[in-house]
Length: 465
Ligand code: ADP
Image 1: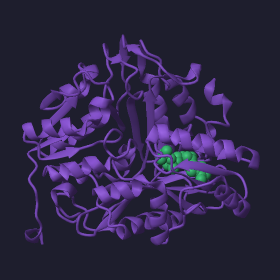
Image 2: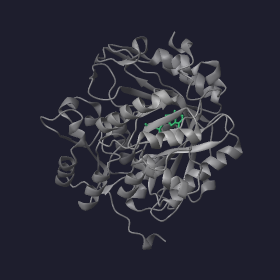
Image 3: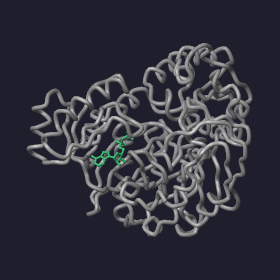
Image 4: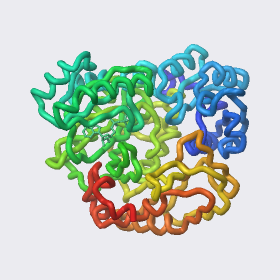
């Protein structure tokens, strides 16, 4: 079959990103015998990702630390000048920028990710919901279009009652959401949500959804090739969140029945297939106490928490992304997934996001130079880091993720114990980290039996002790 496919050779891949995800992608490339190119901002002059690539180029001279990584034309210039075949966007920055994917195509550089039309479709949560409805998967009751007036929002609450949540159509990263619990709050919330959406995402469109009390956040990893074949890599439970942002993730879920797991994973797959999705993506759901599940959004990119799915399935998701972008089919030996039944879950994996945030001061990001750094490690421990070690300078310019600690074992209890042991081994001086808080999470009795939902952190003051 491969003779009818057009396989592109990738000699060199540029990663349009920084930190741990840039290094994660370089590692995948090196194992595939592909040369790697890093880009780095002036502020990242000494950042680790710069030294982990075969070549590295300064970008964004005189520009801000974030702007450097968002300059599509400059990044493409670097890519063309250095004979780059493909660009991996990582997560954040340009990963979900439709224009970037399009410009790569125009320059005949492969964008390692979905097609620009899917970035557009899933970048707008209202359109994504419409797509999910078309694919006949359950969505949370919500408005089918952005809200044009207060009256429209009131009409929705009349039918569905309170609480509701106002969400920015272009929102992401846990931002642009507002819970409304009664009629008095509706108008001010709508106005604020709009203006926040406009300033944060450049799009003031917001819509209204029923707010589910205390759901679990369950998401399904999907891989799809360019020939209409798709598989799921089962689910991750990402309910341990703070301010709608994931803190600790678990795979597989401890509490889903086989039947629920199958329906959720099948639904995710159905959406991927019906929308013609290509490459790696994640379909996110909320699951209520009675076991019902509802679609919330698709993330058309690699995610921070992909590591735990790799650990339980033994599938390298980033390498699969690269192979799919080259034109290989899932069933080709280069990817090696002949069918859904070839994917098996083994054991349990947990990821903790160690950040340079101070739990004693409301998790404000801390900055400074790391003066002592001893890492945890050992059997069943995976570390993904972008800027750690003695001498690393933690600046306020970028997100505060320091190291992702993932543990893997036969049982959930063992994986959790391994996590606690690993976190306890860390010694980091010079910047504050959230490690003491994470230790409290992974040894909490409710965590250990899967008895938690998205309100876990907010309802457990003992985690902050
Ligand atoms: P983002 O794109 O910013 O990550 P999501 O739509 O994925 O936003 O939602 C992030 C989190 O916000 C969810 O995991 C959940 O905790 C909460 N959330 C979102 N929508 C709802 C809802 N309708 N009801 C209850 N919680 C919600």
